[in-house]
Image (cartoon, rainbow, N blue to C red):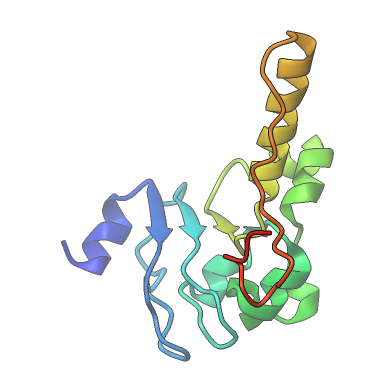
Length: 150
């Protein structure tokens, strides 16, 4: 399937590409469905982007400062950045304005969603008095050698 065909057919598009610095955008944005949602997760360096600016202007980043530096939002002027995911969580009226039309989630791999889900699961487990706490993170004595167990 060609990219233009994908744009006209897809309800959800995930950009997970190895696009090079300065080689974006990946979809043109010219043929998007009026209600499409884009998960932009491939850009991870300064100068890499996958989503065209007009489409990006309606998007929502998970971590605003990080998105401005090395995610899709690095293409935008600071005044055109819009709101971030944390604000949408806290303000249902702002979130409601994003329900109709094109939406873009500009992920910076911050992991906010993972932290929220973990907090909810821990709270539920504690309320139900189930589960055991275990340490699953290893903090090495030598930070340059993560395999140094002492």
